[in-house]
Image (cartoon, rainbow, N blue to C red; front, side, top):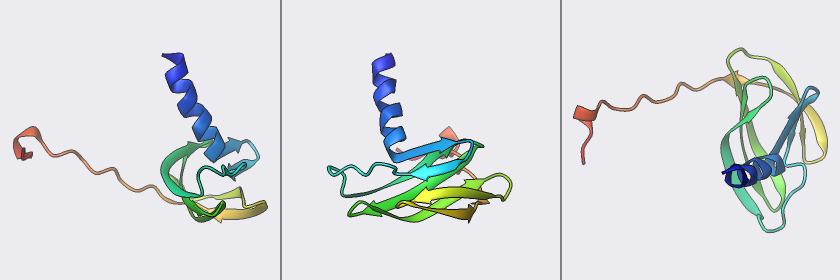
Length: 101
């Protein structure tokens, strides 16, 4: 079981690293993944991170947290300070009686 979860953790570390000093997004771009996007990765401090990339360059970064704050973020080799957005409420599942299927 550890091996199954270990690979997921490894992939998450390729995409996002967070330390006490801030967040680093895609610190080592992967040639086999020229473009893509992720939503819902968690960084330290309960920050949710969404971003996309194309041709190895990160774009469209969004950070969410319960309380707005400014966080240092390294993206494409440069450090910037980004303000977090309010967390998006999770959609509630429909009660079983209301589900179609």
